[in-house]
Length: 317
Image (cartoon, rainbow, N blue to C red; front, top):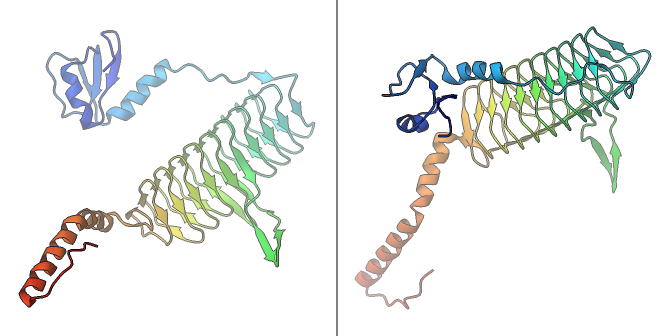
């Protein structure tokens, strides 16, 4: 809609194909089946992926530090790899290890014996607590906390006794975690986020959750303790998942689904409580017919009463 003759854009969603008739763009990246008169088209199999490669050509470098700021507090026993950047007011605790080429922006806290891999980007004000392990090429956005205590309490009468959370968090390679997320450490053992998974902003991952590789989770999702999420799953916005269940590989949980029991692999669940989406759609369609069905039943009752010679007071429910 906005591109001019010196700009390039793309169409990946069929809903925007109509805009090809009016666009002023100098070129448009599209799928192989798309045609449009008077527009320069660059046809590829996956236009969104291809356009991402185009954007990388114009992407400014991240505002990440080079070298170690004199205002950073780095323990003498911490190990920094080659080419690391450490910003002002970063704290790196005893025994921590940072891989080659990793950039740590201002205000980050890295606890005792934490390990961060190579070529990571840790944005401002991230907290990575003691013994947390982050793999290679990970991106952690501002305000996220890795390794906060899990929500574990044993109640005795009116007193809630804190259960020590002595496990940790493991974030595998190529994971990206959005802003202001909380990933709790395990009570015993680790909370784990699998290789290549992508988490949006404002997500809560409770203690001992296991997330398989390649899974994507949208904003405001909460996953309760000891739940296992399979590989290449998709959890859309504001999904809630109870603890101690399993979500099978490649399952999809639609937005605002409330998941109270395990979901089989490849299934698409929706609603609260979450059920197979085809079932939910049928039920929603039936609910939309209730008004007409109610009126029809009342009419039938009146007809039956007249046939029986019954008197009715005309009151309606």
